[in-house]
Image (cartoon, rainbow, N blue to C red; front, side, top):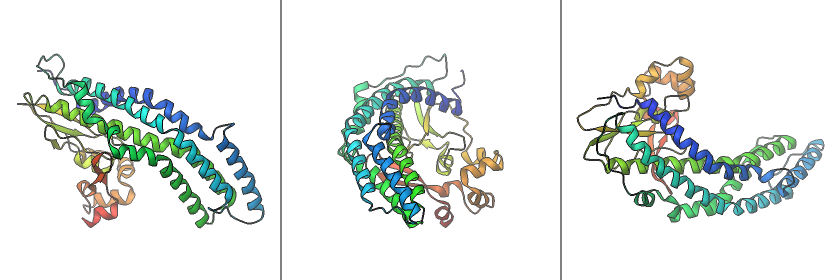
Length: 329
């Protein structure tokens, strides 16, 4: 029998297919959110007024206060601009889910069956799969959409407070405010859409694997071996997932799973063994310098980083705890 696709090649295959669809679906939304403070917009005019005032404050030896009227008006106008994007957020999410279902239908089989092997494979009804992964129908998702603008504005307000508390000059604070107004709305939306896509992908894949219980034994969790991987995902790499259960991951998580045909095995090296083969620099990028030292000394294990919590939209999710928490285990 031809060998099944290798785990890391599987990860690349998944990324290649879903990233193309994601870029197509989300680019318009990200462009719109990034351009909220673009040339000629009301927000841009407010930002310029803020920067002019910051120069005056700096010359007078004063700092930019969080309750400054210009700051308050800027945040109010940003909130209004973000509210206008609610429909765009929902429409984008629905497109992401549609293309994710199609990707799962294609990839679940390709990731499991060796090339050239003809085994009967059941493909679930697309509408049934869409019902399973339609997070946009949940009241919690609707709450997220309603709260998106308030959440972004609150993060920006806290940044202004932090700059003031840290004693930063008015010009630095104004520059930081412009940067976060430009970047944060798009980054927050991108994080949520990517999490929606990957969680729905894992849900849909679990449905496909369960529909093929006549030929599958279980699936195996696969992470991405690179410097972006978190210790918790490394720890769980290679673990067995019962059919019908999804891989739980964190926000922006990239883990997936590969089905295992009955009567066969998959030789999957552990995340721990992979990490041992990596140069010190790579180990430190993943664990941090202190974390790498503690891990090398046997004071902490990768599994000590593993935790979970319940997300209001996506349910059970993975969390990689900080080093001090991992050490306490």
